[in-house]
Image 1 (cartoon, rainbow, N blue to C red):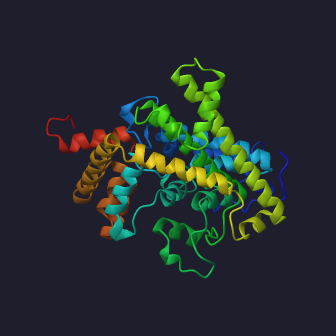
Image 2: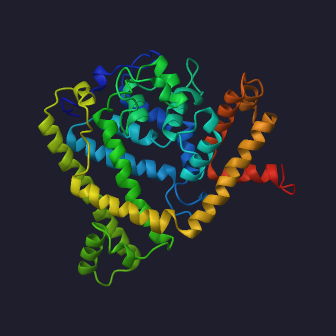
Image 3: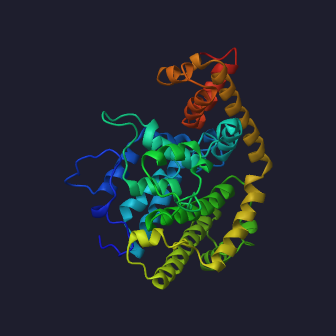
Length: 391
């Protein structure tokens, strides 16, 4: 792998919080990727959804399939730009580990419940999972990932502090707690690879939410034909294959849309990197602005697409009704476990029962609920609230 001067080089990684012997066959970033894939939190993404609830259909994306799509896009962009593919893939695979059951509905509910104790944030939760809650190794809690992967998880969407002297008290407690032990330089931008993972996330979810919404019947191909980029691609496919069925037409259009988004990021980022003339990964972090970006024209088109999704999909009556139901599930579970932590499983019970404060108990309960899959949360809620349900 030939790396650009501004890429993250595994040979000069800042290392791990807990020193470990290097692998003879895998780079530090490859080991990070593999540890993420083998984690319990990653496996649970199979039954965590984004917009639809897990039982609503097998063909809708889950957090797992989404993460795999993001990783594929990130590898392509990183390879083209001279970045480290393995690091981009590791950050992409980990970026959704902190999500709750029921997508953003579950996160909003937990954030409301945790408001007296600093709120809830899925990016901070992802960092907590890989640095604490995954407890499988003999010598440390968490996965003991490299500094570069951890900073990517924490700040792939941009700096979290204004500058080095900024008050870290504004941070979510999970971020502040880990940063106090292992400085992630939260006032700088993330490395190239994490920035690539963030834009790959945008590409993946914008495209597949359109695909999932079309499959669910929340809007039609005629509705999509009015959108920038999407409409042109549908028109191109229709002109080339006028007799093609709706499913294949949509697939052919969306794969073109994917390609257009990726090419736009590569072209815009190449131009920015050329103008910046950066000579190291640290220079890129300290540059003061993101270098991985869509073009201005594409930003405008993406806003139109997101506005469409918000109106036609995220605020659709069927989706809103399910959001209301699942929010009640999360709130009920939280109230039950706070009132009676003895109902928690063995590995969580002692920490909650013997918590030194209501805040610590709430964090334990929130961590437990956040780790649930859609299916498990619904089953547990039924067991705890339905007198006729089998315990």
